Image (cartoon, rainbow, N blue to C red; front, side, top):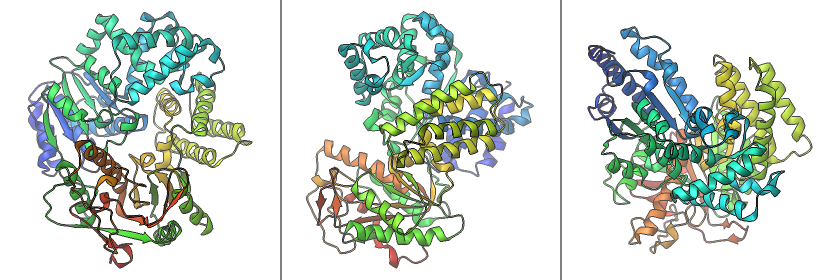
Length: 606
């Protein structure tokens, strides 16, 4: 693509981005390798697409086929692909580029990319992989003991697979010897029965690249630009995959937000953005304009000040204090009643949707749920986890029936999908539970979304998207499609989603945060009722734990588009249901630059 097109598109992009200096710095940077701190609502996706368009128009990338976009989840990958499809041709239209340009850009998640490699080269590891990789049922190592053919694995082999899973979740980079041994067990003992582990999908590709360098060389030379979204969630084997694809000349754009790293418990590497910056000499740029809250000054200040605490490790420079409305109850029930009262007033307004978010499932959340039921408020129950047996089982059933029903179908329309959903419901009609009912609701919401919003997708794209949702157990991401004004969910389940209003509940010491218990000082202000005030002279280890908790707190706060409320009480229940009194609000809610104000006294807040 001739370089003379660069000036034309530069003018177009500059106008579109309204003079946002940091966005334009990313887009027009001369650096071939950028790592961009991109919080939610800061224009990350449009900036990324404009950067790609500029590189194509100016000759920085010779062909859109040479671009690989990777992200953390199936849903996120499809959303980005849609954005690329809609916006990239529009930006490049002045250069008379084909409209099909966007279709040539590969945008997928890590597993989707690895499956494409295995379709072509899996046979190099074993003849069993001459079969379409999508026909194998993907499982977690923890499910090995529940397989119908579990007897084919010895106890030692089962333990070896589970040890690999634990190592990856612990962010421990596996050795080459360990990877080869793991892969051999999967090849010999699982593939013959049409099972494959999620981790093996990536570990197989790492082995192919190691044992057959000519294959690795092809991919390393093919992709001139690698774009990674949600980079802060990268685990050790995904990082190994990226390293195997990057050459001295590969252009890079890594986008992420360290303050949204909340998946450390399943292996997200700590400080991965700093490590990548150093390893690949990347230019760091932080986007600094929050467009989600541009017309919401209090939420904008809250976002700014929480981020400032994280960057400066609880010693920020604050210019304006943000007011955070709080409900305080003498008992957990008292807190729940106040939450429900506010939810009722919010939900009365047309189009308003509200989420009640909890740190985890337990007695504290149960009491809120009981109040919703008592007050006859319809709500969606999203308090499930990826490890719940019901959650795993319904995904497995969906995957099995979906592949059976649609593998040879030349079309996937709403009528066929509704039939599929009804068949799933018949399977579970005798085993209804709270979680099952919610998941079936999510399935209907997903089908409606695919049938309407994704109606123009090719049947193959619809098939791969839905299959990946079931295989990667991502039904929870369909919560944004659920037709319910009130959602009850965990913070982790809500990541990547947003609602008009958010009630962040049980923000107490030992309930929401487990690290601030180490802080010593206490205040007895009747409004704040906090256990401490950061910063405190604590060890680096404890400080890191508090930062991890702050990430969860920040993600919860920023799910709100209009306003967030926090709540706490002097009473709480631990994981085993034991009751404690004299509780205090945790320090996360009163970091520098944040002032708690009684919610009922806040004027102008709905």
